[in-house]
Image 1: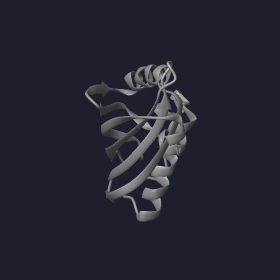
Image 2: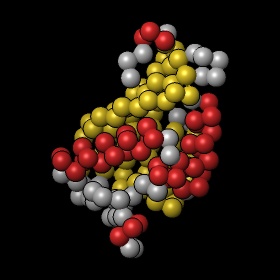
Image 3: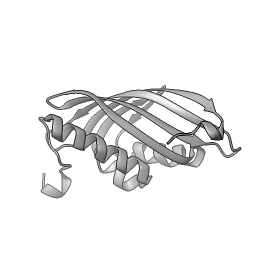
Image 4: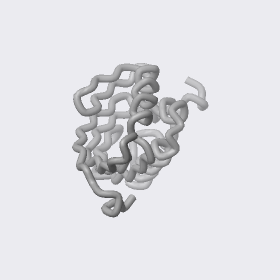
Length: 139
C-alpha cells in the first residue's frame, strides 16, 4: 500500500494519536464531504448504523448521501471514551434539522476498529434521536 492510502495517525494508538484520530473524524463528518469521509474507511469496511448494515466504501457513500438529504444543518461532536491498540470507543452527539423544520439531537456510541494503514475497518454505531426545539440547540 502506498502512503497516499494510509490515514495517519496509524495504530497502535497512544492517547495523543487516539485523540487526534477522533478529531480528524469529527472534522471530516462535519465537512459533509462524502468522498473525504469515505477515504478514511477500508474498501471492504463493515458498518452497523442503527439497524442498517453497510458493507464497503461505495455503500458508505450511498448511505451518507441519503443521510444528508434528510439531516439538514448537521453538526457533530465526538469524544474519545477509550482505546486499545487498533480499537476505539467514541461517544458522540449531533444535531440536525428535518426538511419540515423539526430539530433533533442524536446521541450514541461507536466502536471502531482500524487496519494497519489507519483505515477504519469496522464501525458499529448505536444511536438514539431526541426531538428538540430550536432554542434547545447547543452545537
